[in-house]
Length: 123
Image (cartoon, rainbow, N blue to C red; front, side, top):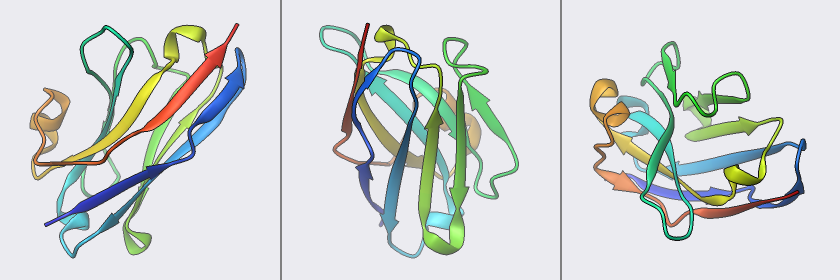
């Protein structure tokens, strides 16, 4: 079992930065690939970024490449998403998710998920 709790969301002006964190409990965190997803009002949930269990392989949605960086600290059971050059279209609820397989999480599959944290980018 993996329990996930996100934090770090908030209100920021366009061009600003935020760092999201996802704290995981449970002894299987380091065995899972992790990902960030987001859902804006009235839109489908979409994949943002993923990282493999070791933190050595990453994948990003085209819309965030070059602006967002995903990373993880396994000893601290924590996943991060550094978001720079934020745009109003990045406004959404961001949630972290876990799956044993990296390829599957990039396809939107997950076994565990958190409640999410709101990110609002003003123009």
